[in-house]
Image (cartoon, rainbow, N blue to C red; front, side, top):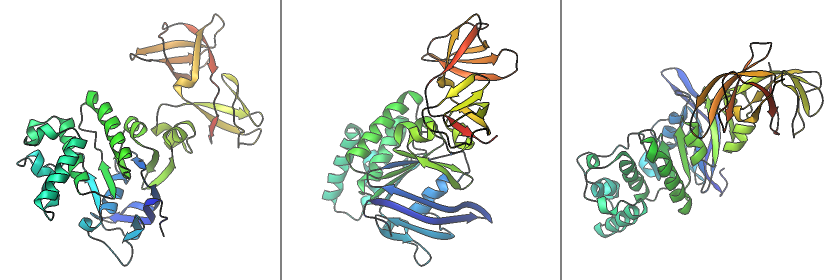
Length: 349
């Protein structure tokens, strides 16, 4: 049974389509006032999970509870409109022939005109669209259309908000501001939300916790910094950003021998002394300095504004590493390499 602090509890959820398993034994919980991101490549089961929660797809096995109330199990399949769940789609799903006002109050037809007006005024003020109430969707920008979709979802006072790629059609210049704005809105109204994306940047900025999906299962669940800095698998490490892998021999409880020399971590290693592993290093964990007796040479460089990405090749080998720097250097420079203090992440070879 879901605890009172759980907005959502999913247990042993399975879903198949045309004989293909999409989800296999999914377990997931969402806390009150928590924003959880389902992150992963296309076809991994993220949107299917949202549709199962909303009641738009039937599971083949398992149970779903929203705020302690069962909405799906072997004996019950509650209709979508009875789940008190709001859903915001990638394409906004606005009615093009209806004004902002009519789009927002569309789902409130069972309420009196006075209540409709009260809820309309409240949610349009929340999303800063009061002055656009009489406009049609085509007269609004992408960000404004998304705000209409948010207002419509919030108008029915849902217990849980589901968002399917909500920022993917938004211009990149507007996207960051809208993510900040929407996160603050959900937090200030104690809303619980599940958000689907394939963009790690959106996930990092919007979510309290991330669930990285891979082939119908959750590969790892945790805070953005936990998953980025302590990935449990190479899939998670690679999906959340560029990684360098170096052959590493475990020397003691804290240190490994690599082509960069001995690297010592802050946390005790779980690997056994003498084991051969792969050490994962993020590009920004490597620091370069021009040195006559350096161990690598800068072979490529790309200026990206706030950062510079470069490729270095270790002297005497073909080993290439990616490095992210604040200031550009010169292609051809011979450099020394230091590794910033961090918890070492080791994987099997």
